[in-house]
Length: 407
Image (cartoon, rainbow, N blue to C red):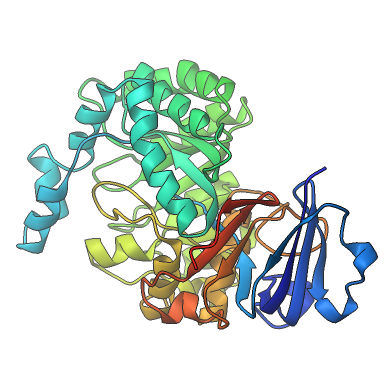
């Protein structure tokens, strides 16, 4: 048995709705775990020595705050190539659409990624995942979507699955994203192949979700719906890139299809958001991408007002948000997404878990996974307040010290 106890926690942010007003803070607290599962999360004054497992690793937080590990529910972590030049071109005034029409954008990454081996893809993604863990991310969703060709898409999924083998990386949740870049050949034939060979092979490789970029210039509602229907036979649950660059109908599709999440949503209407709430679809805001691409701000506050569960994620990708920092996304969710610091922290932890249908993490409560971050500050609000700051001292992943103290 492996066991761990964290003493001297100044503020334990449980992000547990049962612990009171968000983010469910317990002062002067302790955290105990055995075999990766929390056995105690509460006031240290109520913790007896008999509650600490024999031989447990004992860590002293020295008054620092502790939060749940971040659950990053939307990333495109597996890619090859570089699009820094596009970033400069957009800064000079060229539009995302114009760059894509000239062969850049997603297609540029597809050309580089589709040529890569599983080893090359894994090596590149591992470096990014290591940085994510250092920033406090303990679970990360990883999409395909830069292969386009079937075999290349499967290599991306294989790389994502391989990342999940290492204990020194966040746990990986693979997602099949076949409708991302558009094919050169006949669209119907491509989608037919996705609906037969694609969804079956993705499920065999361990993907839990199928995603689609429902957008003008990408894929239509009808095309996405075809894939979701086929994927359901293989128990792949839908997720939707919806209403990012225009109002395409993706949000209502997500509600109608029973999607786990609808992501982006900058152009969503109030009717769209109410439909998502009524269907129990999690709204995932991606404030880094919103900031880089421009347009309406991420609808964090609007989602909450509509009654939706909200998640915050990085959208880590080479074109519109090359960031591996969930703390930065929490800051941006407050600055441009209309969330309060407590709402943003819950959205980046419990909200992210909900967006991946994971019920065993995202909050610090007895019986949950012990994924936690010991901050280097006594104030949990510094996650949002210290914009892009290095606020992580140590990271616990499934009850083990994955990132030792930096202090």
